[in-house]
Image (cartoon, rainbow, N blue to C red; front, side, top):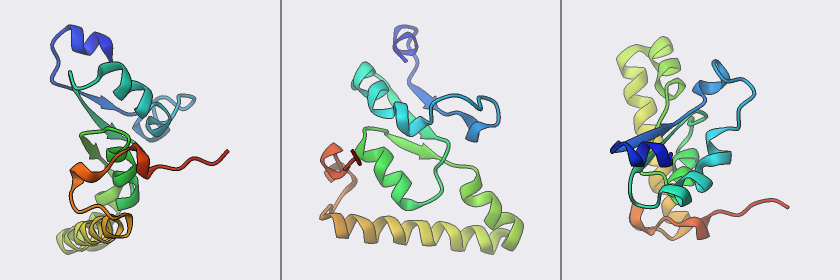
Length: 121
């Protein structure tokens, strides 16, 4: 991540491709906070891999990701329902994010912070 900053990249994609290529690597969620801390606001961090629900997006954004990416998120919907399936899935995702933000007391994405995350001991 620091090297990406050094060479002038605008963003990095934090991914293990769902474990297909790097089966034994740490998950993006396990590394996200550490990487965001290492690069600060010098570069955007995009979290990919394991993003399947709105709650996953909210967790990643709370830890400092600027965006999230997910393939299975819409590919299953596409296979099952075509364009209408994707539209319904994305609408469900939007509704889940909006509902959960309200439950968290967050009105905007900028209200998300690490204070929203609780870890099990």
